[in-house]
Amino acid sequence: MPPAVVLDRSRISDPALHAIADRVMAGERLTPAEGVALFRTSDLLGLGTIADAANRAKHGDRVTFAANQHINPTNVCILRATCVFCSYARLPKEDGAYRYTMDQVWAEAEQAAGAMTREFHIVGGLDMKAGLAYYTEMFRGLKARHPQVHIKALTAVEIAHIARIEKMSVRDVLVALREAGLDTMPGGGAEVFSPGVRATIADRKLAGSEWIDVHRVAHGLGIRTNCTMLYGHVETVEDRIHHLGMLRDLQNETGGFLAYIPLAYHPDNNELGAELGRQGTATTGVDDLKNLAVGRLFLDNFDHVKSHWIMVTPALSQLSLHFGVNDLEGTVVREKIYHEAGAHTAQAMSLDELLRIIRGAGKIPAERDSFYNVIRTFDDDPTRAAA
Ligand code: SF4
Picture 1 (cartoon, rainbow, N blue to C red):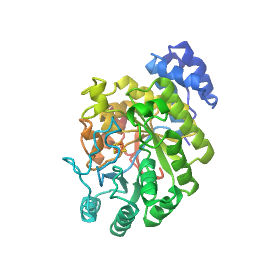
Picture 2 (cartoon, helix red, strand yellow):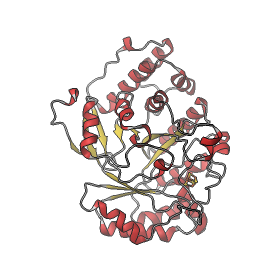
Picture 3 (cartoon, rainbow, N blue to C red):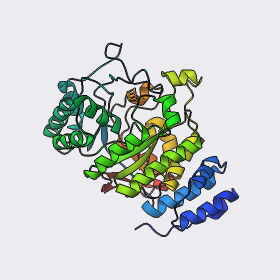
Picture 4 (cartoon, rainbow, N blue to C red):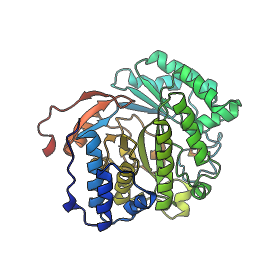
């Protein structure tokens, strides 16, 4: 059990945050108006202090990560023209379009054989030629070759796409995928649930309420999932809180979410970035930290908040460990989606580097499995606070 947490109020300068801090420390749920106030405050360190206390009450100084490998089997997507924030998708005959054969999937996954990989993270486009049989064959083959590796695959948007092209229910698709080896689902495709924002950035994508419905069905089947929010484009802070409210409500109902992962919008090589005149300018560090800290405080029924170093840089992810974050994106092998959108971070991170980042923040690194069970703790480095 983490030790009792003391909140250092001298670090909070915004008077509005004091009342919120009292409610957080009393275990009370924040209202939407309080969530908006957290986003609006200019007292970043005050916000971080409260989020850090809430995080330490749940996790102490432990920071987890998973040894995972990303596989993106197809970038062909029927929504390529209407998800204007996406830099990854291609039309079937467009330059750069690809769809892996099973042999290519096996070859890419082969890197897991000699590595510490415990999870395949598999997402791609809405490809008319990648239906249920494509993924069931892929998952069966991966499990046969790497039985120890967990399969976290297919966003709610991809699941709904497979259901549509196969003329099946979401439930039946999930049952078939689980029989083939699906263990959990990632949280992508959520973007921002507000209909106005969705109409602007992802007009034809699954509606927010439909995204929630797919996760509700998955949770009902015992399939745990993650959830995300893509921030830093045209959404308002009210839109963000509305989005977090829908996630919090579903978590109340099912308890099926494992982690919340805010995703920073990257404006390069996509239509939205050009329209907004934002190419080359990603989200700011302050907004990145606020999204993580507010996620920790508003989503009081979530255990885990993850920082995605690929999007916000390893340096900012390290800082986020004092802003409510208890989990870092793992080792990853060959990330493609955010690098197409201008991410300048590395495409993989070694175990040593992850340990250095976590220890350098004065925290205790621990490797976890996909259900957040700790596998091993690296608490043998007495110099960690000074790294
Ligand atoms: S965001 Fe997803 S659904 Fe939209 S175009 Fe890109 S790959 Fe397709």
